Length: 151
Image (tube, rainbow, N blue to C red; front, side, top):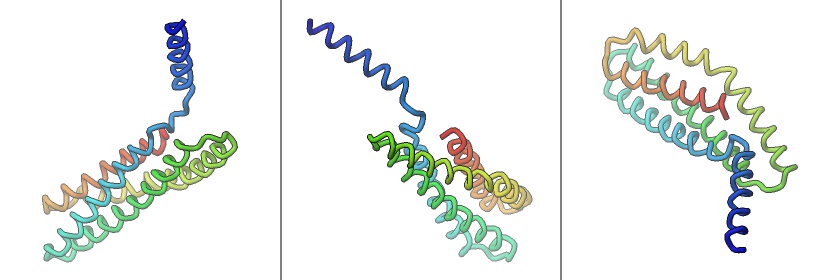
């Protein structure tokens, strides 16, 4: 009898996990993006104060701003996904899922242009450090875009 109960519980758990929405566990991906964007903003700001050329300073200030903005965007999705993961009531889950979808649509609308602009700016840089931090930011934006689209 005990074996049957354990088998039944395992079957129920497997069915529950199979039917779980893909958002479960998604917040950890956005937490990583949030942390990476903050790290890159700090690095770009540090390089800004060490740079001597105006062109480099302009690009580094842009990298700092974009990284900070995308850190906040990742933080918003992180929190909404986390709330959604911990909600029990179906009506509440539906509401939060709708808000999360709205936020995703707005964020996804601007990412391709931002990636293109930043990629073009970084690609033409002679300074290896500026190019390296720029490539990190662009790559993280691509990861963030993919995670947001798949979320």
